[in-house]
Image (cartoon, rainbow, N blue to C red; front, side, top):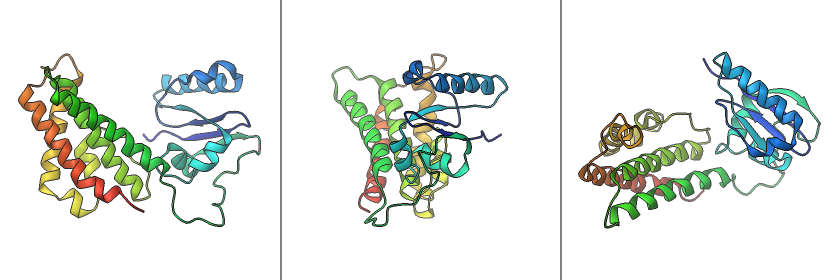
Length: 227
């Protein structure tokens, strides 16, 4: 069942509810936010996942046009609970726009690059951590595949399975044998990098995972650069 996305704007705190539940510290000073927090707990109790996201009015107004952010999805599929009138829903873009915003896209890429650097640093350490390498290699590939969805103008799906994320892209990407193999390997090793029930990956498996992440990165970064 698809969760309902709910948007509620306030002058001092923009509240977006969508998907699964998360806690944001800024709620401690806002009773309206606490009411929505309780609502999120209630929704979860009956099997409907909910996120509670805090946005300023300015951030929501800007990000509702950027598919790199959940605000984009909420502004299109959300249900307005109440409004101060401060933030137009689906407000018009500025009259002069030279290019689409890359804010969300750049954030996805930045986080993928951070995962790649962590995996690379561990690979080059005197005492590598195979589990961490596999974990961050998977996350790097996942975020780049999601960034490619943002580049296409769609909000990335909530998924961790790399083959599933790969399948939504154009044939030149999704049918690439090397990409398919790399994503399959990273997905196979991912559980062992997270859960104690699984044996930790070996150093050889970690090397293969890192090489797979590097292949995905080398394939996708050129497609993500530029306008």
